[in-house]
Length: 226
Image 1 (cartoon, rainbow, N blue to C red):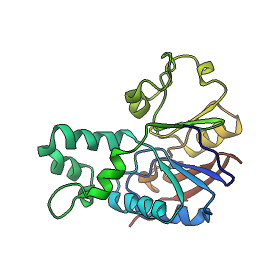
Image 2 (tube, rainbow, N blue to C red):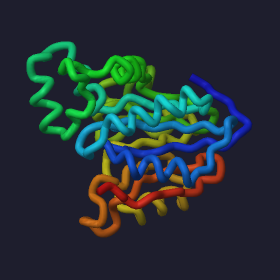
Image 3 (cartoon, one colour):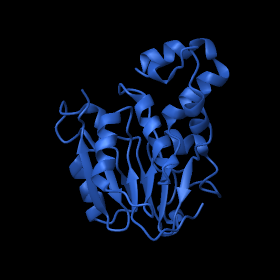
Image 4 (cartoon, helix red, strand yellow):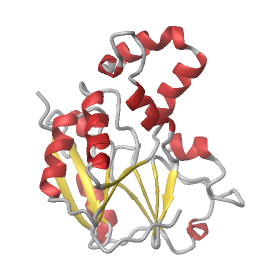
């Protein structure tokens, strides 16, 4: 999937239900219609307002903004529960503080389910590959192993198989300094999950990270959930 734009291209890390923080980060970007925003999975669960995150994404898309969310392991976990173990849905959502995704009839609201069911596992751009977790570079086709793209912690195989592109991912929480250094060093693999859900409880963590992949500038917002 190769997408081209004349605007800025932003990649946002794991939101995990931090709706207010996400809203303020988007406001900080001062988005223009020609800009593109990629969200690399785990938009839901763990935080307290998963529905608020999905609602804002849907609203942005309906307003004409180019927003491209990617499936993360938490989205896949929810889809698996709905498909294979629907009787455990309430328990699952209660555990992950995401009961707000349910309608009054006890099912996932249709607009959210439609969004989640149509999420791609990756985006391939001119100089970048965007996935939630990682890539299995041992495969003849590095995009074959979707399970690894959603849940893998480390690269498998030779980085040369990235064919000169930079892999940007979330999933594995990294300290802010580590993220900054990987960008400064032009690393072929850059993780941008700073553990927004931690807030100020862990030094060096707690920010929702957005990376402008054209300037390689970090724009961030510290967790501001109530």
